[in-house]
Structure formats: structure tokens, C-alpha cells
Image 1 (cartoon, rainbow, N blue to C red):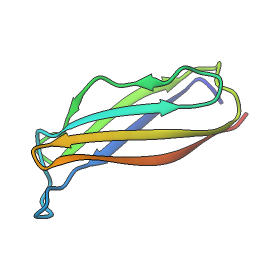
Image 2 (cartoon, rainbow, N blue to C red):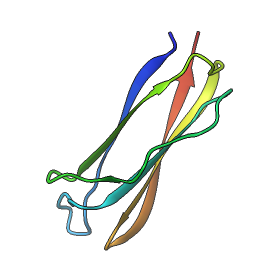
Image 3 (cartoon, one colour):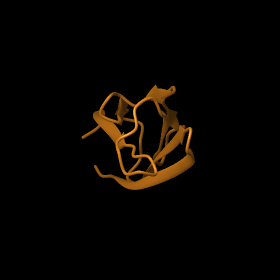
Image 4 (cartoon, rainbow, N blue to C red):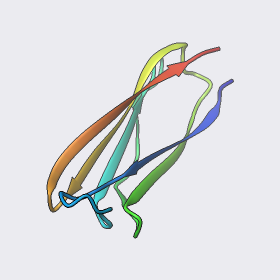
Length: 88
């Protein structure tokens, strides 16, 4: 049921496979019936993890959505996506 809190997390690794602290993550949530929800820049912690918590409000309509993260570090930029489903 909406509204619903959601937490998105990303674990960032460098080219050597080690977790990377200090990288920048920007999260975007796109769901039907709402404007995109965009985080501010979130830095990865000492464990290489960045998290963003927000609420999907009651105005969202059922259907498919998308959670996207854009990660930037000294090694470059990469994106990742996850499908979201809004149900009644």
C-alpha cells in the first residue's frame, strides 16, 4: 500500500574489485503517475556502499517503474537499473 518507504543501495567496486569509498551516486526513481524522485549526490561510505531512502507517495498509479543509479568515481561513470512494480 502507498505511501511506502523505499531504500535503494549500491555497492561500488573499483577496477581491482575492491569496494570504493568516496564515489558519488545519484539515484532516480520513475513510477507511473509521479514526477521523478531524484536524490541529491550520495557518497559511498568506507564499505563502498551508498544508500537513498525516500517515500513513494499515494499518487503513484499501478504499473512498472524504474530505479536508476548513476555512479561517478575516478575510474569513470556507470549506471545500473532495477525494475519496480507498483501494485494496489
